[in-house]
Length: 195
Image (tube, rainbow, N blue to C red; front, side, top):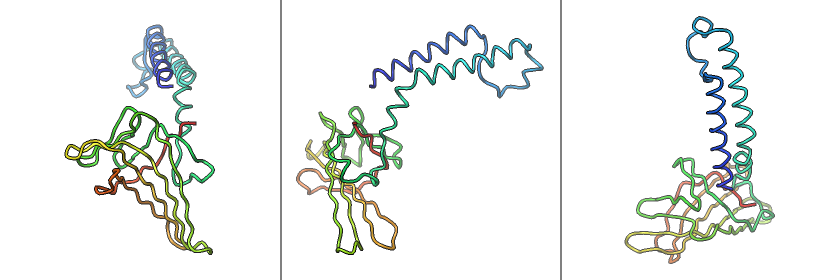
């Protein structure tokens, strides 16, 4: 999918470059009044170029747009959505995304996907029977690395708590395999599912 997206983007830019050479202008309408400096024919070429470029970008970038539709708010996932593998985890507080090619660091810990896409596990608990309190837990198996303790398997836990008559609460943490060095993290907002 990544290669297809890159190919579509390259083709779109090549097409725009070709159309721009033919039209001899750009889509920058913020310049001073074009009626004072250019001819009517030049303005028409500029408008035609912009429409053509927009159409080509829409057609050729479709794979990239389609790839984005599998992003899900993890707090809205339910038991029926599991098991599922994920391709990416988005952290808006860090303005970054973890995926097969990109790790994220918390202090001296570096956290990554490892060799396979993570397979998520799901648990849901309700206490007591009158549904006063509920907890949803998503477990994401990952790889952790620390200069002092080396590399180990670890798990990212995403907790979504619901208490009647109160706002929902999210809490997230990472636990390396030995559970001695667990640490809290800012929760991600979205998971890119591998569907």
